[in-house]
Length: 74
Image 1 (spheres, rainbow, N blue to C red):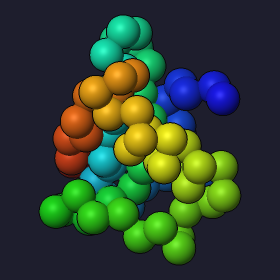
Image 2 (image 1 turned 60 degrees about the vertical axis):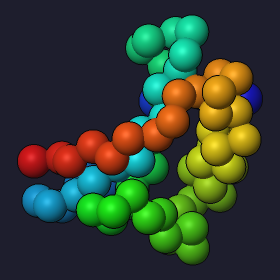
Image 3 (image 1 turned 135 degrees about the vertical axis):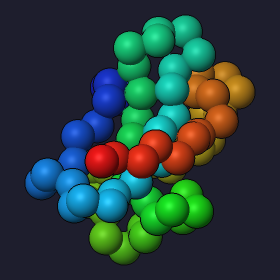
């Protein structure tokens, strides 16, 4: 699985947030999924590929990815 930064399918709205999992070993690599201000992800709104990447990142916390952080997009 290619775990580079995953782009949103369309440009984010004005007050959008991303839950970002940064690679522990490759600083330029990350998985990012849309979330709310609290970091909650609406699984049903994700595409199948993004959902798979999200679950992969969650299972690899501490091994490949750091704990996620909520990133505000302006």
